[in-house]
Structures are given as structure tokens and as C-alpha cells.
Amino acid sequence: LSAPFRSGIKLEDYQLDPVVRALSMPRVSLLIADDVGLGKTIEAGLVAQELLLRNRARTVLVVCPAGLQIQWRDQMREKFGLEFRIVDSELMKELRRRRGLHVNPWTHFPRLITSMDFIKRDRPLRLMREALPAEGMPAFPRSFDLLIVDEAHNVAPAGRGNIALD
Image (cartoon, rainbow, N blue to C red; front, side, top):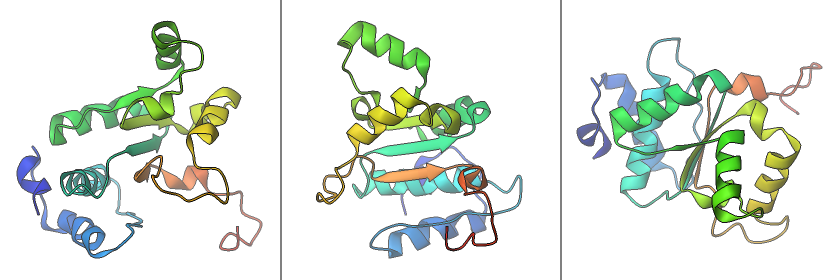
């Protein structure tokens, strides 16, 4: 493992478990559901950094509640040396002004953070769909190699008793 030695964190042993599991999977799919304050962000950052260092990931998208975007950006920069851009209406305006009206923020930067509420809006959602491979088309190269959803319970479907089926 390289990520723990390149990060600026005080590491707990249990925080290495998701990284080791991720590396043993051909296609990483993890649910990190620790208690509050145990370092889920650190664990996700370690996984992201390790996959980036090993060239198993090139692009990363973090989807989180709006109030956590700056915290994610700052923690990824301070603890892992990873620069992320927050995709919001401010960035969209800036990009349109500098790069033209048809610029797509989802394809412009390799590491992005956005809010759950922003990505549901009409224009950001349309641009996101344009950035993703068409249905039925090969999924390579992927638009995003790694997707991190913080507070994932906020994106789960409303329960009708068939949550597992949904």
C-alpha cells in the first residue's frame, strides 16, 4: 500500500480494511457504513488515492450533500494532496464565460465534487447524461472510474416495502 504513507492522516488500523478489500476486487464496489466520526471520508480518500496511484482510476466523482462539498474538497487536498473541483452553478458560469456555452463541466476536470441537489437539476443532469456512455454502448473509457456517494441513504428510493428490489 502506498496511500497511507503519502497521506497526512493519523491512521487507525481498521481504516486500511476498505483499501485492502478494494485492491482485491477486479471492479471496486464498496459500502463503507461505519459509525459517525470513525473516518468514512478518510477511508474513501485512502481508496481513491490508492487507486489513482496504481492507475486503476483516473477520474473521480464525489456526490455529497451541499453542506459537505467544501469539507470534502479541503480534506482531499490537505490529507491526500488531491485537487478536486466543486461543480456548482458558479463553476458552470465561469466555464461558460471562459470556454464557451457548450462546455461540459463533467468532462472538463478529472476529479469532481458535486451536491446531490445540484446534480438533480435539469441542465446539470442533462450535461451529466451527455458525459456518460450511451445506453448499449461499451462503457470504456468510463466517464468516471470512481464514484463516491457520501450520505448514500439520501439517494435511496423512497421505501414502499420493496427497498431491496428498488
